[in-house]
Image 1: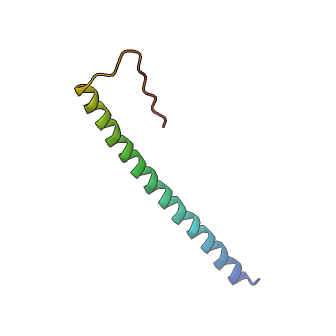
Image 2: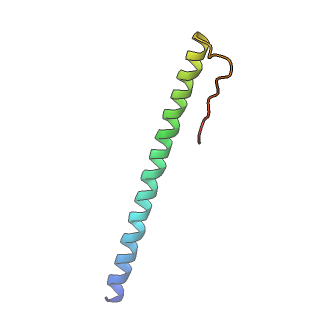
Length: 61
């Protein structure tokens, strides 16, 4: 493989990795926003009907 080909190959690999990173960051942001709205729903539901005592809710982040 020539020098030019190896540089082109490396830059393609780097740009693909960057694109993947951007996608995972935006997915993560979507998940965070989704879980935030879910937590809001849970909070508003708990004001309507309080959870029985001894009930625990675990949030995994």
